[in-house]
Length: 115
Image (tube, rainbow, N blue to C red; front, top):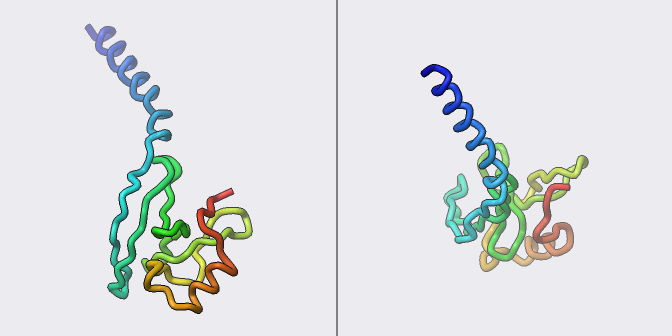
């Protein structure tokens, strides 16, 4: 009886291990979500990627990351190729001032990813 129980648990363990690669292929929901920044600004973001490699973007495709203070910031490539938050707080496209829009188009690109 103990051997049968051991075989059952081992088979169950292998079954769940075989599902692990499938988790990486599950897409993140692309539905827009409104989140509150610490200053109560309402930012609309969209999840993208997979469950294993998720990323978040503004509605016009700029990748955003949360900084240590909890703000969503536009993402930029760091020295090692990993994305890091820039010094610019993210805003909805309609709420961006001309200066912010100019800096975005000049310094950052939409849809950036880790290398």
